[in-house]
Image 1 (tube, rainbow, N blue to C red):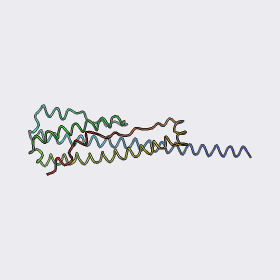
Image 2: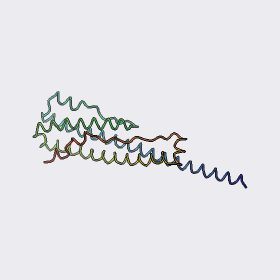
Image 3: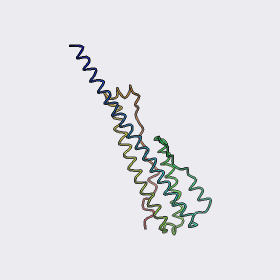
Image 4: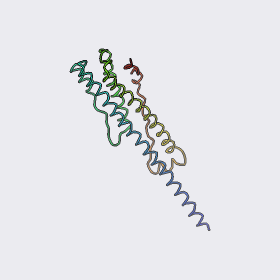
Amino acid sequence: MTLIIVIVILAVLVLWGISVQNRLVKNDEFCNNALKQISVQQTSRYDALETAVKIAREENKIEGENYEKIIGMRRPTASANPTVEEINANESALGGFASRLMAVAEAYPELKGTQAYQDAMHKYFEFEEQVRLSRMTYNDTVTKYNRDVRAFPGSVVASLLHFERRDYLADRPEKADIPQDLFKQ
């Protein structure tokens, strides 16, 4: 009889451990997916900015050297498994890229009046909003995952299976410097 009780208890513990492991894997995959979504959106946002720069160049509002400075920013990393560091670096680079382009637009007000340029910048701000929402989703998902990794008794399973805490995405301090209504008339 005691042997049956021990076997039942062990079976319950094994099933519980499998359940915790499955939850950890699910939340880990949600985190990975959220990072990939942000990476794709960053690339789309870069493409919208690149289009705006090309329009400005066609309008002869950006001289060759300025064009090279603006477009010289490296394309965002769209790796299969982006890291938090890559996403944060891309955000910083995109912010600098957008700031330089906006400075050019301020120097040439007639450029801001070009419909194609306005459309490209409108797309940029749409992608900016999508990235912002995806960053919030990622950080919320990381909160749930980290809670599972750190909370007892799930932390025991997480430790045994080498699940580690994930980093949050950092806020971009330079984002506050980018005026959101710059291209509205």
